[in-house]
Length: 108
Image (cartoon, rainbow, N blue to C red; front, side, top):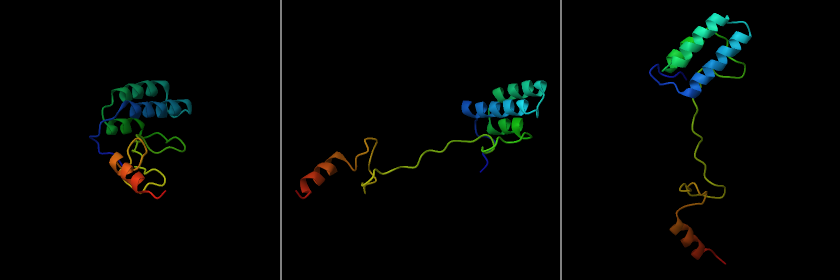
């Protein structure tokens, strides 16, 4: 999925572009003059489209998606053995009153 051109680029996006540029220079795809010019453009890039323009004609690094890769949040996880969707950061199931009720009504 491509990012819309107006999406702002972050420091991590620019850093990934710099790595691609460095690798392209080491492998002989860019001259030092081209590398210097593109590094400057990448460091000043404000959007994903500007970063993509800097690296568009270069081969992608093996095992990586096209630049810039955006992170996705981890899916919500319910603790093992918990049927409630209210488990919070503590990793406990449900609310405190619900846990107290469950303890009182649990068979002994």
